Image 1 (tube, rainbow, N blue to C red):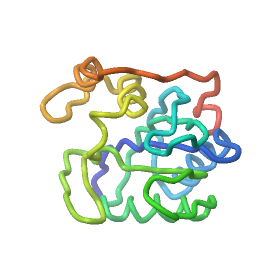
Image 2 (cartoon, rainbow, N blue to C red):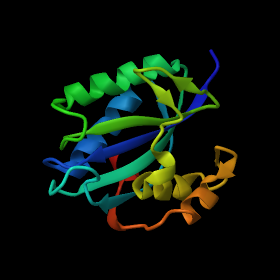
Image 3 (cartoon, one colour):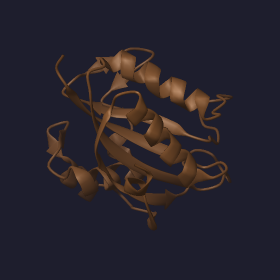
Length: 166
């Protein structure tokens, strides 16, 4: 089976944030995904959530034999296993695992949109992507160029590293 390179966004703003991100990473690995690279972890404001606690965010490069829908199902199952309860779209969460990019696949369904539609607007996605894949192209531009076009970057790099989790 051919391997597809995918980039996943991990985030958490409830409870033991870093530990939950580590647990998600270990679940992904246990499910057969090859973890190729992990970005630094950043703390940032909770976008669209008012006064919610800040998030920890990172990006992980993986290789998988799963198709995009299968990877989505896996991510959702891991979120559930780690205690995520979906109450509304913009709500605090124990863990969030988003498929950001899946090879060169473009999908636009109600359930899955690839590449993830918010990448180009979110510093907490572009900065970690820049850290591990600066020449990656999206919408005809490199991640580095897209990052330079951001209006502002409000992130704080934390000392913990997801590579410690593996």
